[in-house]
Image 1 (cartoon, rainbow, N blue to C red):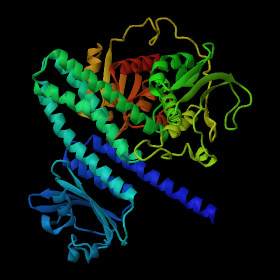
Image 2: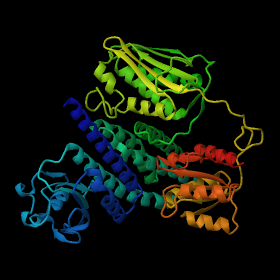
Image 3: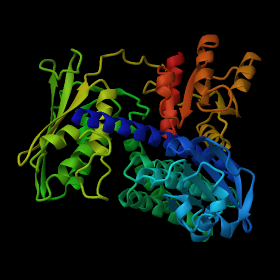
Length: 569
């Protein structure tokens, strides 16, 4: 019986994780929506499956009426019909600006019972869309009476928040575009940086459903929004000096980069982040983090580091590895509330490897604390997503899961040894990087090589992203032609246009960026190809093609172009 219960629990957890992943895809789509029609289309496509409902409906406020504009349901509901605001649940939700949770539609005074008798609906959730004054609502319906689960409510509310943010972002971007026409060149450059920062933050804000959906997550994101919105507000006044504008932009960028790190942490736990493994010298990486680790631990915890400089480089993504180490150190700090010692050490190992590892050299990075330790049950569940022993609002349960997932992606493993009262030791095993040929002088990507000047064909169906990337490339000295779909790119090249490199988005109507890249690899191998995408999973489709994840800065773009040109050469 216990095993059956465990199997059932595991099955439920997998189903819930699948719905959260689907909701995350919906939120990513909503992030690009700039109109109510686009928002309605995304909700109609994703909401029912994400929530696990028998039907959903999207309702728009039409003066004093509720207009049921779209639905996805097991049986027809009210698509195309209008009802008075005071006589429907969606109207109540918008007027009262709160979620309506109705376990039995025939027992709730807010429900016009006659309108539901001919439908399958017996229970429902209705959530408003629009923060200041709701202008729409999304409802989920079930054919059986009963209280919807907290997860179902949280998922639908998260989708509604994402839709609300998309509406606000649409208005904000319109204001920023108008402002750009009036500001001088320096303010114009800072504003573009802030737009990219806010775009990064919006992506992260939507991904909060992958956490605990608690006040702690909301608190973190609101703290990041404060300097960004505050900086934008100061610039929009037009009354501050160029120096103050630069300072506001720098603060907003710092907050956005912190927000980007949070998103990568969430993606890492589900093993959906796009990695760029290189040869990473672990002693240099730890040395560069030492000040950050010391400030994170605080004065009551003694930090000891024993990482020999003679260690060979490991095969890893340096940014993701830094994030994993920081997560493990934060966990260790929280396990030592009265102070203690944290010991970080590393050594090369080729024998007595953990069972999952293939025979080859590894670096074993050990992070050991003198904290409270774990029970066997806690140690067993420690790497499971969302598992946490911290109080509500003080942890997402993703730190160890993220580190565990990253180790697996890189060909290593994460092991935990802990005992109550004796502390915890986490071993992070990473493969030693295989030696490769050094880049010859004069090759693209070599240290002495300057930035390449030539033709770039840029393909992206998102006008804002395309325009921003084009401006970056132009500033770097490239001759850029930008278009909005892959089929046109192929036609131009077949007609004789020969760029040095094609830079393409992945998710586009018609032909995807990965399909375009593979076609060019076969028919025009002399043309370098690079994919820029916010889609985390492109490495599964085109693992050997240089790719750059959104959002990115100019230095990241330059490095990726150099790698793509070197690959083509």
